[in-house]
Length: 288
Image (spheres, rainbow, N blue to C red):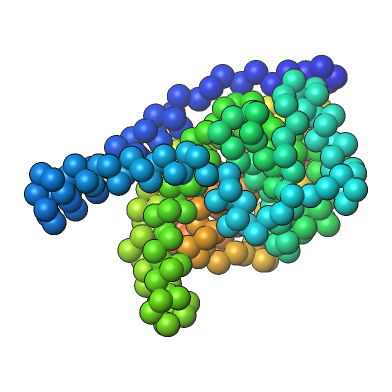
């Protein structure tokens, strides 16, 4: 598969979904403004929505990486990781993305950015611990497929918007002194709004497309299937709490990091891992 270029068509759906989400958000702020101060309040509400969207566009990568407590990783620390990313970027004819490491024990990964030239791949320590080289190559190919498919723009900006929307929940419990119970109550208010934005911009089909493109790039659909099976199993054992920070990055990750209950059910945008594995094994020529 040397020299293979990822040339997935830019998906219209996620971008259109993000645009619709922004319109809905602006309409919501305008409605609040009308109730508070009439026509002037509506204008102010729309301007606030525009400002929030601009902030999400500009800082979506920093917000997502911060939510995962990620730090830049050096080549000295993980030379094999750098080697794999360079090889795959060259084969996919893509710029080499920045690399980050999250301290999370749950194995997972995600890519964030507005396009190929400012993309950043983040892996968790748990991911690097459980995968062999072929499986890690498959996971990295999956993240690069999102970059090539141009769906990281919609998913990243929606992550930034979700982070901004749920910020009052995180700040509220600190100010109220009620701890996590206070945050949980505020998440009942802001969480569904963030979930709407995320679900409009991130669809199940984007994961299927990235899996298929990754199988071609890595040249080993079975290795990616094996990696997904491992990661999904361990993520179920070590689920993350859908708090005000992590709700913004759950849809970016290669498998859902949350339990499928409560507010996390609204945030699930991933197709079933078993179906993804089945499709990859079919690509690999497995017969059932």
